[in-house]
Length: 450
Image (cartoon, rainbow, N blue to C red; front, top):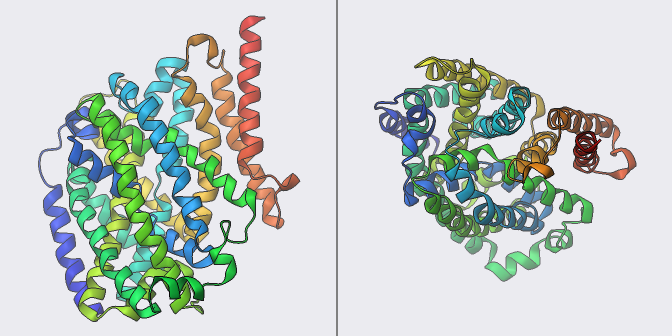
């Protein structure tokens, strides 16, 4: 199986490079592919980008059962629908390029730079580098750090050929592979488990409960983290790149339906892994281990390729987002012709290196999502959303900048304090961090009316 998988991966890598070739342009051409995304292209690139955390879903489903859908499914559907109906058409009509650009128009350069730092931190694809490294290690036997460096370097290589155009072109292929892999895996796993009902009865009781035995707050916090969708750079980038406001709104809504189908496939595959592999040493490898158990060699290799495509589609998207943030939002303003592309390519190198370091330091996809999501979403959520409000309801003076800094610091401090085993006051980090952001908004409004 590994030899066949390596052959397929080699062909896959060649195709990715070929799809990524072509003129990249500069400015909007490099960053947004000239704002010409049609509905099919929009859906393909958004669906694949937003679902790269595939091994993390398997890890969560193996550990905590059907609550996976209430944590990684429902809250994100709700947030995405809200984004589509309220924000997507409005954002497309702004003709902006990035979140920091919106902040700059409303609050000035200082707030924009702080926002760009948050967007960059949110975009650095550490979780996806970790998942890709785990897959590469299983197929090649390489040490984890070698696999992480190789995966991040290859992604940076082909994305650097034509920028956002490379991301969009390759995502169409990734979409077919990611759905095809799980359409092969789940029926075989259910057959091995004796059918859907037999599998359900064989699960531990906690895995059949709505919260996985974790409690209300552990589930509720993911509904707050899902609000990250409202400041999610990948959503904004694709909306800004859409051909029209209608494509932007419809594309997000269609994507929600596509995610619901994929969530069914992945969640129940994770539950099957828990039943068939109850003593699995590394839950992050639940899907690859399940494929090795229930699929013949040829189909197992095809499924593994689908896993690689699912992870790589998000890795390249977020790596380019991080690089574009460096090239467009953190570099000189206004940029010289061609400077954004050059700076973005350097951003690819820096962001890939940081992603590798963070992936090896944390070692858990779910932990990375939780910590980074808590800090950055708390910092950006209210300042970014307030951009769309009437002036009297926005942050006053420099309070937007202070909200970004203090909310991020509060969430980070809360996470560090929780390393002893429990968060202070039993509260998840986002609750006090958002309270600080609201306090900054109130203080700014008070200063404005004084």
